[in-house]
Image (cartoon, rainbow, N blue to C red; front, side):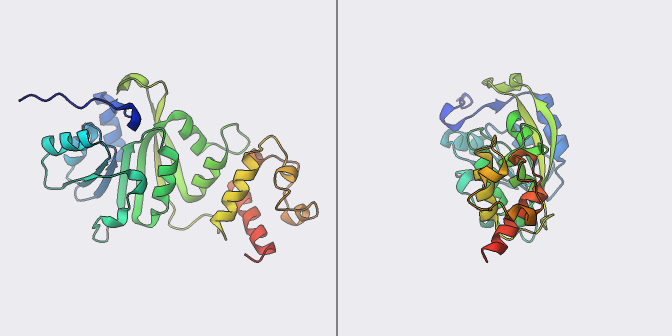
Length: 265
């Protein structure tokens, strides 16, 4: 009996990629190799999934929608395909038997969970080789933004400290069904095996970024007054008249490290 393909559900933020040329371009950019361990997040109806399996890679997929889980289990039969009905925000890659391999991850991420999901994955980055995602274009612009630009913010600093990030190509709304109201972009991330700048406390860095960028129109002397006194800024070697968006990743790490040293943290 013919069964129609599952429909997109708004509560899961689903927009299914249906443009074959875009799908092929993503597969080409990712360049999966035989026997590699790959995790696909949000496979949807399996448009990317089937082409990844054709590469000979070992593929695990995470899908939260029961209708899509049933659809995928009924339509994809391959020896190296493993389907997990789970919430990606709570999925641990440690549950996968990687046999010493590092994991490659890709997916068309729902826009409403993209940022927390990125940070969740980076808590497991020692097991991850690289990641390729389709995200809202505005998010990608923030991820790769340079200091001194409007898009530069907490997300830019936090991710650039942990990964080499490359914005690849844009994907028009017409490539999806249903058509989203936003532009999308493909982004490639390679987690650093060693941070480019030694960081004493990620918690303190996060606190500094939050307080400074939540008041991004204020100069540092005012936005970070709870952390540094007027006389501290000469020791820091940073002009307190600058705003948060003018401070480089290296300087943010320096601020966090000096604060930890001052407080013996």
